[in-house]
Image (cartoon, rainbow, N blue to C red; front, side, top):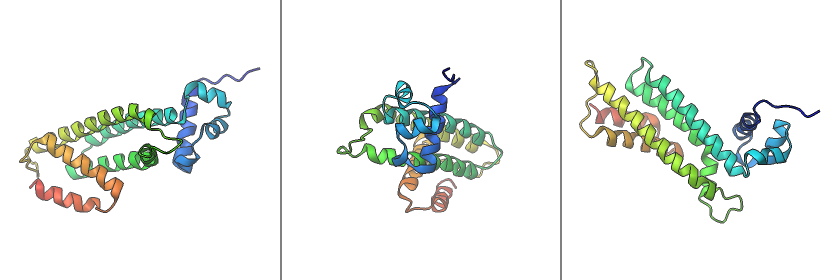
Length: 191
């Protein structure tokens, strides 16, 4: 008798995430996901025709989880800089998890090039980054409007939010500039 799995797609995603997080992108394969899920390789292909489709689905799901975490951060009773640091850490987890995918997307000669599939995710990525910028902008507006606010914003809040998010991404990817230094510069900018 055939085994009935209630939500095979979620089972596949959960096992793929476990492999990605614990073993890295190079060990994430349809065969390994099938083995970890206790499913036939063909079953995985029914849901995800390629590895890149599986990775894109994981990235989209991760962004959804990230924005739920951002809501909690924004509603917390901490100050602006603590909230920004927590947002930085959320973004750091995402970028660190999927960094190999982005690097592979830039290699046209790679046989496992996720480029074509990542075009779809790049559009999503731009939308997610834009949403993150708007979230930081809302945070800046709320913080500056408080009667006891320690910050004064002397520039366009959207441009400032974009500056913050783009610097977050750069710091995560290059790791040459430490967050504490960025925060000190930001404090001087917002005095």
